[in-house]
Image 1 (tube, rainbow, N blue to C red):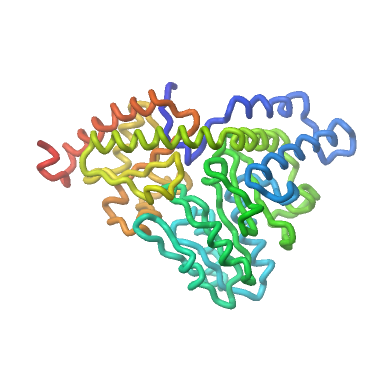
Image 2 (image 1 turned 90 degrees about the vertical axis):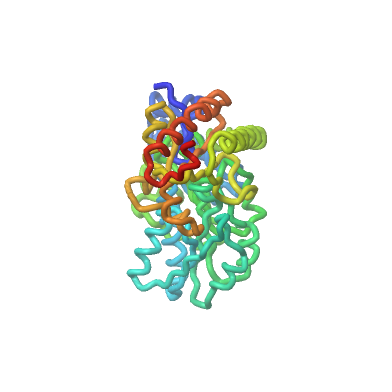
Length: 390
């Protein structure tokens, strides 16, 4: 299918270079790196290279700070579990109201186990402040977990500044950086973060591979136990093809980040400028500057987001109304609600997320079809004011 794909915050296509890099390990080099024999054992060198590439992408001090996981959700859950095991007597945890379900659902589960949770509010632009975090701290706080960039709006939290403020506190600081890694520069050797989660399929690697950064010196309690893989920190047969793929994707992301991010930002800004001239009564959500270069979340007043998506899909255009991990829910976006948007506007928002493979032709095609879709839906909406039908 010839698809115009604007849902890259949900998942990305696998880069050709990544597919090429992993294929030998799906064919001839299929051994288990935990084996004693050379046919399997020799494969560990490819895992080591991948680990170094991931470490370089996020500016880790050493590759041993990288633990391979199955996905961002596992990384998030592992980080939270580890923090609470490090502080077994502390029962207070802090996060924001706009986190990914991988964090929010876990925190809700912990509340049922007796933990007290502080959920930080965001402002109308989707931001939090360092002061909010510091004001929420108590002597009983074990963990602060905040996303680096929001998956729905692209809004970037001040993680470096928060890390500096928490550096002398007796707690652990985790960031879900699944949407940020590979899109904006991250240098953990200069950022006081204890743990960071990332996912391969957001940076043009396949699904089923992620990683957790754990700063050296942090005591680590494995979430998944069994074999000795990952230096005893994450059990399970080493998925060499996927790890090699993530390593190659990390290498490509680091090499092309500056040029590609600028090109993507220019294309996103072009789209936003043009769509505002073609469609009336819309609002671009999130901070205008503190936002990922690829993400545009727009509300189209008086109509349902689901109807927009279905009609765009009929034109072979793929977009999203929010997180793919909560797309089976009819509830309005918790992110947009937390930003103070009225219920009806939350239901009218569409997220367009670009990648390095997005072309000007695709954007122009979207700009040609989107006004027609909005106009036709507004004509049949009982909420559309008369002046928009003239």
